[in-house]
Length: 362
Image (tube, rainbow, N blue to C red; front, side):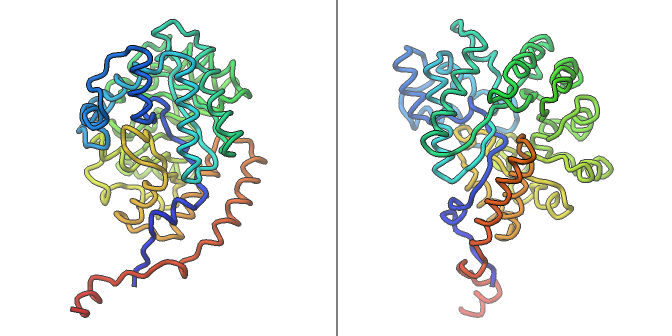
């Protein structure tokens, strides 16, 4: 008899979300509310039509198509108050499904259309995250992003911002945006600057381009983690290097299907990676655009890819191990979380008959 893990149980497990974009994780109701207050035009004025216009949770066929939803979200993310509210609500939503630690990423340069200073953008987001931490206990830090398809000079400005806010809520630097035809090596100066200042690096790679993109992220830009990494399986030698060096993969299964990086959930390489010993983590990518939560992503790993409760626990622990936190802080998290996870056992799960035993019942 296979064991069925209900979504409600996964929601009770302590978790991380290490790969979540602020501008892809708003509440739909908040977009509508802010648009009305700010007199901003939207493709639609009610939830159902706006959901359809933004392709929320729908397969888009490509990363470029998927990113079009951000044209809408960014319209209402140009004031300090809006950024504080959105950051607070993201942390609140995550806390409600027992996410204990979260790293929120975004590119401050995308929030300056109405004249906000870059420092104001960073501080507004940190204010929202800290307020949620006070109320709900969820710890959140920030990863600042450069954008692949924007000039390397602008990425360098984002890297300088990350350096300025190191130790003040910013724990990493990332390169996001359209991957194909926009190699990370063009932004090498940005990565040199952040690494010279001992700042953690994660890079979107191997999602819309092959394993060469992952190799460049690691060997040219010094990535400590890889965002997505779906196509790592195409290069066995590189896969073993990533495994040997414990370079964590920030997997976002539903998002990968939505962008066309993966055909469907059962063919996602995350199970293969985990079985080979790679350090895999499960994340949302964009709570709104992908219409998901960390609990749902873990539940889909169980439902569509056969992850057992033990597998899910291992992935959760990998999330805490891979956090951009000081080692002694991670140790504290790991001790506490491991103890909590021990309380959840296979014995408490309901059994579901296998297809063979079901046929015998007929």
